[in-house]
Image (tube, rainbow, N blue to C red; front, top):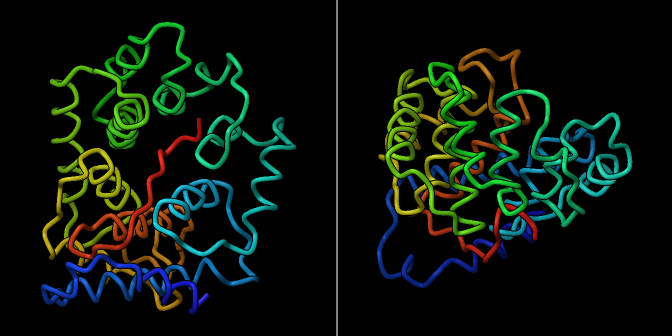
Length: 261
């Protein structure tokens, strides 16, 4: 893994050599390396959601393959009855569309699936209708709505309600920064989705430093900031996503939609 990571870092654009990076860039890079080492342990039982996110990040940012990825993705693919995340396998590989993908159980899943399968919606307004029906006082409804809109725009060139998009972006940033300097699962998710939604957005350096400061010694992050008993693969993979997208880091990026057509 060390060779693969060094190779990836060696692909960084030449502009990094022309302008000395700030200390926060090195802090973000080191945190990414520790996080990837955590996921690279052959003894780690990889969670399904972490495997799906990592499949996207691996292709986009040139990350090494995880030991358990193939078996986890195969389990999702071959045991759909017991894998509620099957519809989201599109983050990792092309799968045949089925009508119930865009009408799953749960409002948050329904919104997220509507963005991920936007090209297959029987009526395109379904996505915005579902977002407008959500209680945006629920923070995860806010983060997943922004993520769904971003997928529809970036992956399918959808033209959506810009007023709602701007509102969600503002709410998302409020969520991301509400507990500073402590960053838990929700706040890290909000920052990751905010950068995915707007690739030109650069978080303040102190936000990156604070996220790095919340990392555990083993390279993971916690659902609840400061709670050593709540380490989470979901939070950890989102933290890596947030750090990898940090523009001053200039991590080499390869073209890859979040969904596989």
